[in-house]
Image 1 (cartoon, rainbow, N blue to C red):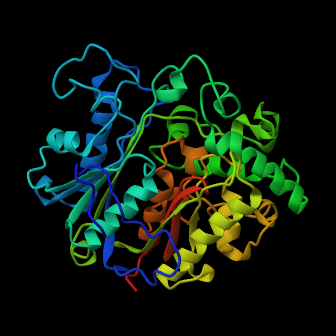
Image 2: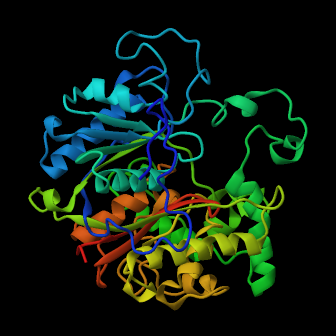
Length: 439
């Protein structure tokens, strides 16, 4: 892995983002040893200091350490995705240390968390920003860092914040006017990269393969049902009702054919993971979950709106790199937690990976079968963002818990030896292949 930038904050080159790299050099030598998750709020109220992103990050990190049976002294690396910093919500009156800036309130840097937890031995800390901000990217980065020997036990924290008012109300999204191309791309003050842009791709998909735009209804009900079995999930704790296919079909359109129930709801919550060497993980409290490969895709469309061909090529590239780097193939993967930031996305991934034999244009038929956690095709068993809220962590948590045999009511009845877990839309994807066995 090449060096981080001079400021120690932004990674330069660490990706596995092109074919021809061969089997990952650290395959099976790195493991996820601990999990933790904060409560999940719809929004932070701007007042309660026990429910800030910083407080939630400390809570999740402490849970992960307890889960692994490690102490504060054991952590020598911290990786976080702090999100946008600067002035989205400032200036404001601050209550004082450690809450004397936005750091710890609406963002969480590695430095802040190290101070807050009192981690005495951290000598490697990275804040992943600017285009590498998803949970799958953070886990891939940490796995590479541990494999390369930059740290031995890395705490990975992924915060997702949400405050009253317009979602991500900063930068161009906070302006009173939409000018130039943004008149079409951001007319309501929020640039829906996976929503507005890929809704048109979804429509093209339905036309090409002769599918009804209503074909996502079975998936919507399944994800909500799975999410209600996630102890920390938003719906499990705040809106514990299943939805029916009729509820889905009657939900209002956001950008036809994108419905309200196709969209994950922004949340305020934090997930934490401990990544360490396989040798060390064998001596810890939980069964090791080994990393077999990590990949990233950064697709660039020819125009403002990607085409179906481009989206399918990006997902195909991710699958090809995953198989090459892990030495495995579609028939080896038991758990498949595809990214579902919008319900219109997962079919591109499951078809590219040909999981359970699903080929291009066949996902809707697959959804109409038995994809429940107790059936033969337990798709997105963690509930994803649609079942738990937009935390972008359910995919990774469930994949680890399924491989450990600790998913509780969600535990699948089929073999659970290898899991795919992803994050990001097809043009900004970060995926990992995990296993209960190192080889």
